Length: 282
Image (cartoon, rainbow, N blue to C red; front, side, top):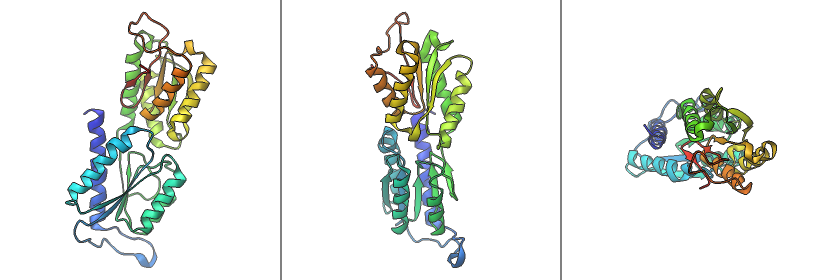
């Protein structure tokens, strides 16, 4: 199964779980609100969809349309989708969830900006009997379900793609490792998977845990790496997602690094490999 198909499968699974949970109601477990699973009538549900950011194209161009389409299919077009994008701001996402709780959505599908910071919002939703499905990124708190990829396998695929792109520099070449946010459990899994194939083959010139996965932070990290290592001493870059890869490539271009060579004999060269595919400045 290719990356696009895996993403579709995860999105569909999250949607199906959310609709099922919303249709059956949710057990409210606190105080005099205790009610067990009151069955909703019909498919006129209100589903809150909260995605973490819009710098990585997949969320707006791929995940959102698939989820909205599946919600429509499962409810005969009767359900309302209430959408919000946090633009990589955990405080904004908390406010968005509060608004959806106030507007009495029947279920939430959430891609968390910050797995820990969202815990209180998840509890608020749970206290109001609103089921929460964590999508793609794990969320702390009393979530009802979690759908994601095999993120270690994704990391292994990333690392393998980078080694292939490095060619003869895969043995002993120097790379910059651009990991995701330290607050996102997925980032640690990507890193673990990637290093399982990179360790012992390449040298880690610099390694960064990129705050909030932001391209501008990846750009600043890459600029710092170029300054510290020298632009002729970097053979490749590992980027944990596509959005950060854009910031990395901007830094490489600004430093005057050449485009990918057409022949292995031409040097110096660099490669940046992200979550879905190798990317270059060409």
